[in-house]
Image (cartoon, rainbow, N blue to C red; front, side):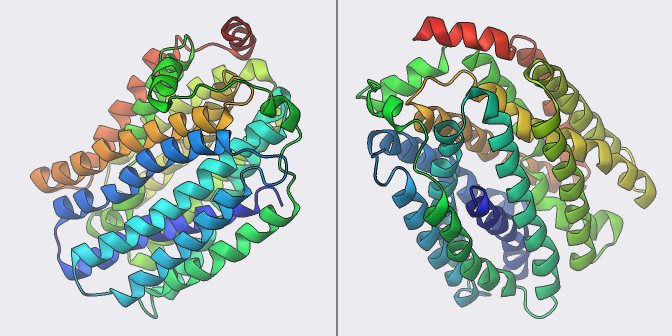
Length: 397
């Protein structure tokens, strides 16, 4: 029940990110313009968490906690998604505005929901809580890819109807049954910084935090363009249809989900950083291997290590970062982590789109992705392990 809202968020993100470019391509075949339009996702992902995270920390009451943000964000998401079928075939502007509303809503939901990992799990349980959310989001993503891919055979806008109905329904169990916080007393008595700009600036330069954020920016630059352009890559390079390409993304999600589930439950804290380093190396190497071939067999084999690496990064990256979050500031620090992820995507999407347009090949996005991902190993070398993170947190307190 804790992760139910994450299923809806995963469904929404996958449907919007995977099939909105397909609708845009029906209006006009322009990969550079599509990549630029799709930064509405990243713009919402950058601005919304910063506001919601800081605000929810200060409105974290004993009675309601972060629930109003999850409820309101779910309804806003549904409205944006419902507008996409109505604007189908009209213009880039109409579709991008509808997508922006949906992305704003889902970012409100995920920011508040991510902060619950820190609110409802003590330090030793952050990896399990985050792993549960990541697996749930992948479950929603699989639903969006498989069912959404089948629905595109009926109408390319049909997956958006599915997501609009599913988001509020899936958020309800989390709103109804999950406790506000098991740590409410500690949160209520924590003194919070009154000014958001100073708060975020001070948080970004803390030892350990800055290394994790730098590594995160680089690995996000590596994978951010993949969901947007993979369907088009599969069509133009591998000759696959939309439905089959969706199944490929589903297979990527399954392999990532297995890595997320196992890393979230089986590895102890001392293994978190080594496995995160391995995940970054696997994803970067996998992307470069995909770019090196147009053979369906070779690309299939290269997708597997990239998917496993992505799963390790998704679960362990935030878990290592969460060990550095002071009690009572989960919303703000969570917002910072995911806002910078969105900022990296703002850069990655147009760069990938215009690179594809300049080179005439969708394989170029995997070259860019592999190089950026492997570059994340440099700042990651300076990131603290969980034991060192506890020491840094104590000094900050």
